[in-house]
Figure: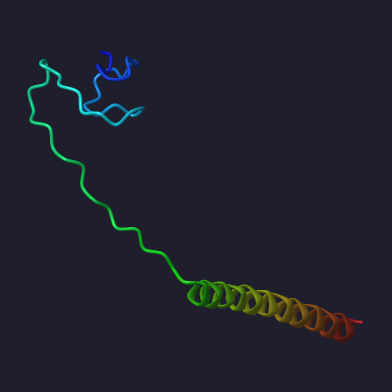
Length: 85
């Protein structure tokens, strides 16, 4: 199907994506509904910085826990080797 206003091929769409005009489709059995308005929520810069800072703290705390666990395991292995030898 072609848009009567801009003559572009739009298939079975009810609104032309090129010019935005509404197209009457006689083969369509369901009524055409108006598109719903969607609300876009944006975070301001301070809350973006805060969330990024919190995620960085989480990463650093996990990294510290892994490194301290590795140090503990190495010290434990050294103690076992000294006790056996």
